[in-house]
Length: 545
Image (cartoon, rainbow, N blue to C red; front, side):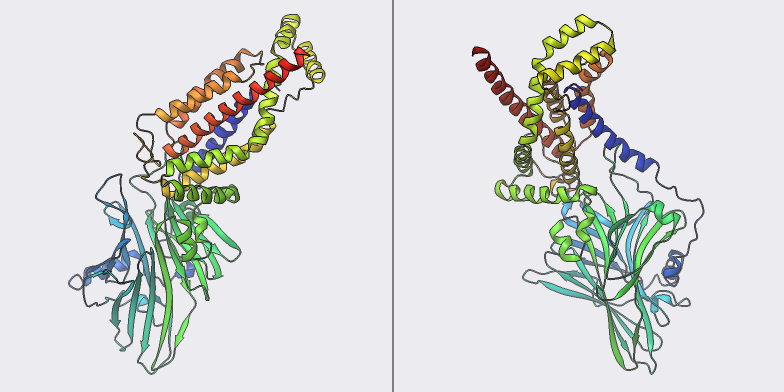
């Protein structure tokens, strides 16, 4: 096989990879038209949305929302049930230079994403079918993390008809996207009481604006972690097909989107039951139920959990919960992508610019692959030297493909040229390319990160398409340096159009990905030029002798 086909193979592999992504999206299980509106059997006591709405109408005079502001997040907590109905990330604007902060949790007329939690069971106030969910009381309607303050609590209190007191406590720490959520129960009655905590993320299945495009399919949906399965996606189609039912010690449940994650993290030392549900035709929920807690008369008890709502920053996710960092999804090549991300972060610490960090990472990766690349380029150079002889064979045998093939193989054998020499090294390099592709796509650090000149957001498209054009141009120069051995006019035309095809593909890619590819192509051109000149000098010396 002629070495020019190496470029074609690389292109076909890359395009096939993208087409496989699209196929996975297009063939995802569809939601059935009618789905039971109650929560799953694992959480059948959890109040439904209709019950919450009815109770809210009956208590409109008491209903209110309190605001909590820390150095990183701003939350809105509904005193009816104590659900978190809005979360804003203060360090992440919606768009570049926007004054509006990105909201993960929010309630809009056409979209809902909230973090609900409560106490169910025999004595759980959220399981009261007569009075509905508890209406909590608090001393103020706004809480702010003050300068010099590292931690504070927001306490919502409710006392039921039996005199039992329930305090729902939210704990906030400086420099943290993790919110501690706990229940402190004072059983003032003369009987044992039994309670379970539930917590779920409820989200609209359809979102008004999606970040994916035909070339960059991004995941939005559920995920969970259990002892035997550290990380697994569970999308809305999965939830429609079958309710999630997992019993595990610790674990977590989450809703994912590009660059960001919201996750409920139950007590890691207790058994928890994970579940999911599709509510009506519009909403999906994924959550957990803790193990049952029995509190003796005249005593107290506590149930703890936590909520993470923030960016997919690996160090923060690792601290929040075991395996939560796997939501930074690098696919099956995570073992390659994670060290590459670490190396890119290291370079950023040196230069303070993510664009230059990508360039430095590219030089290191290409340098590490140089032994493979050299074999590839040496094979290409040998194939180039055979071109005059190949042309002579073509002139000799004309359109007799059988004789032409036999003569070509004899020539390869005589000249000790391996026709796969330029292809196999490239195939070994493809996992690294794909690992880099996923790593750069999943790196929230590149969101709104400026590079230089007109590139002010490495996660966005190049506004003037300069980088994709440079990528196509460098690819064209690379193809010109490779031997053109194909006698098939169709293959020759396809090779001529490959740079154009790739340029069109890369028009839709984030600037950070295209910057890597352009840099990689430039390094490749430099390496090819040096190696080809060395081989030519060696041949000149050999001929001189």
